[in-house]
Image (cartoon, rainbow, N blue to C red; front, top):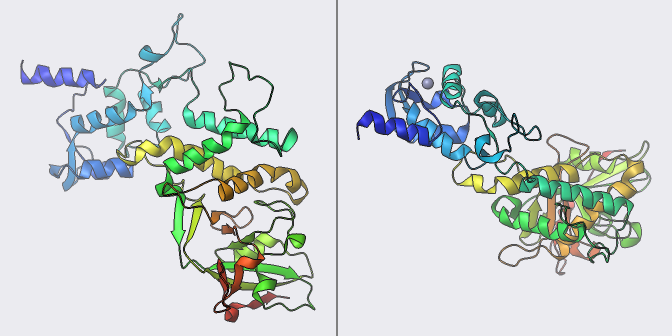
Amino acid sequence: MGHVKRWMEEQDDSGFRSDRYFDDVCEGCIGDPALAVFVSRNGSIDRCDFCGSTEALGMTVGALFHYMSACLGTEWDDPINEVGWDKGFDSFVQILDSDELLEAVDDPLRNEDLRQEFAYSFQHQWCQRDPYRLEHSEMLLHSWGRFSEVTKTQRRFLIGRASAKPKDPRDELLDPIEVLDAVGDAIRQADWRMIGRTSDTVIVRARAHAPNESHGSPSALGSPPPTAASHNRMSGAGISMFYGAHSEETAIAEIRPSAGQAVTVARWRPARELVYLDLLGARPIPSLFDMTARIDRTWLRFLAAFADDLARPVEPDDAPIEYIPTQIVTEFVRDHLQTPAGRPIDAIRYRSAVDGPDGVCWVVFADPGDCGAIGDGQKRLLLMNPSSVQRPTG
Ligand SMILES: [Zn+2]
């Protein structure tokens, strides 16, 4: 078989045919960082036929499009293979042309000529793989949505027991009883991003109080006694946990002191290594063109949306109902989630709902007895630095 005929057939097998197959393209013409790394690893080219850069790193258009075709094929397909036809493709399924597809995958090609060459070379249309089934991350997210609704408005305390009512067999979503385990599975699947360890993080905790009061001890500035533990994002009234933040500003913003109240803050450190669920870990979601990290895209897409929902701003008046689903998840994380090596989780790190977009919060599963001072002779989880106690307001 002739050389030209072979490469034309190879192109057809990958779903494209390009007249510029042997033109060179440089990494600078690529917008997606993972795709740019792939292109740069190929070695140097004399001149980029798209932007004119000389002595850049790059590869041929053919090699680039072959790789892109393989990556895209993990999530996208030609609708001819997937979608029902009756005088046109089934209107339930979103059909994209190649230009729209590039937009849908966050515009991986920066150079406009290259982008046009892609659209010209891949002349077929695109749809998501398995378009008649909910994509797994969407199924998880919808199941979480239903879990939230059920626990807010229907049933709460026995959510872990199966309902006696039979489930509709057409229902694609997980039963509420299955949702917490599915969340746990997603976290373990992506544990390299979602589980963190720290021995030296500083956590700032703030306490609002009357201006004539003065507080300086670990027992006064650590986790509240259960009788004083109020309704909170991650814990119900009467359940004591240690809420803090990465910065003093976020710690104060989170406790929302009322006018006329004073605030005292203190800095705390772990007494031992803390293992924490990192709800900030789901982002950035790996690129479709990242050959190794992309296997976790499904889990991370779900976990990113789930983390957003957990950190959603809630009006104080709505909190008693709106915080119920996150409180249940927090108890699940504390009591049932483990690292792959079997270690329990000590804390959750999450985005602040009131000091965004960079405010970072912590909840540590520490009751008053877990909070102490360095050298007090007790087994603690968190230690306060006495010299850090300050009264920034009031
Ligand atoms: Zn270029």
